[in-house]
Length: 389
Image 1 (cartoon, one colour):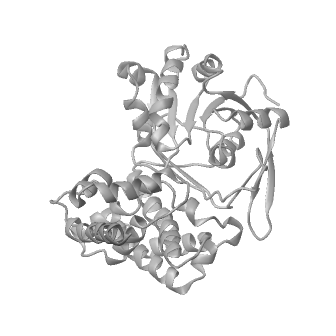
Image 2 (image 1 turned 135 degrees about the vertical axis):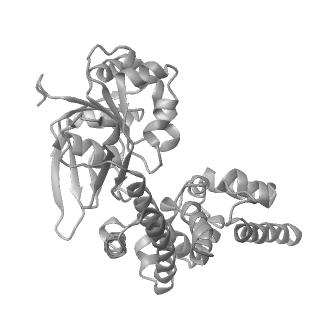
Image 3 (image 1 turned 180 degrees about the horizontal axis):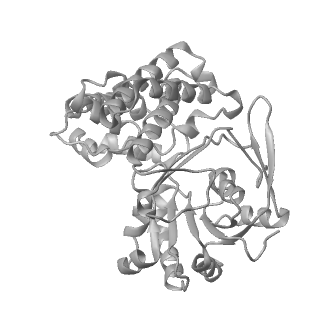
């Protein structure tokens, strides 16, 4: 049950990551969590049940009950949400990086209504560089934002597999989780978050996770799809898929060690742990779900182009990553609008236009020649299909 002394945390996004990771960690730390979402069915089920089960999927699954929360509709109960933000100590979000600008005005309204002297700590929990700063930049009153809030970037890592149908609000997740917070903006401010790790320089941790866990997961999925597999576990069991994924991760590892000065032995252990996590059959997932949103995943600082561009500039030709990028350009998923749009862009833009608009790569980049060749080949296949189709 809530008490008047419970500190308040508002979390945007009551989805699987919201309930199964950030919202759960906040509740573990003693926060009264106010979830904000727009999914009315989920809102109704969380209210009706008054609690949810979180199960960590391992050889011996562990289940815990979470009930120190309320949930509001981000639009229909906007005034209530603003009042909660005005009272909160922390605001977090796991809504997808492309949605962050849309929640910024609501957070700004909460800041305007805030009479508490202590600044609100705002943390976007997304797989994106500078995600919390995206929220700040989207606010109209930058003086207000600076005066009443602290924006801390974070790196988050927990795999949430495809959930059983009709299981909401309960959620199943992998046992491993990691929430790393940039402590620099906090100064002397201390947050009571025993489940989080505070570091003074975050970029290395964000890229380590993005270019290892996310690149490996996507590499397995994309190369697996090319070889006819439908799930990650099915794909990772294929020696050819695993070899291609390992080769890609060898290149991302070389880039990370070169760029951030990571200890090679320590990073090797991190890679081994990552592959063990992805091979956990309890967190199997569909390849089409792992590969979704391919345009974002092919952008300049994402999990494929980011490490490939750095490798090309400082080390050599990233052949293994280029093979995964090639598979990404062929990604197919029936009913996936972004996958269809990717193919439309490939068909209609020139190769140079495609590289600049989708991948953020221009002729001055070391990766440009090899990537241009890949895109040209894909465009040639479209021409052939059009000619003979």
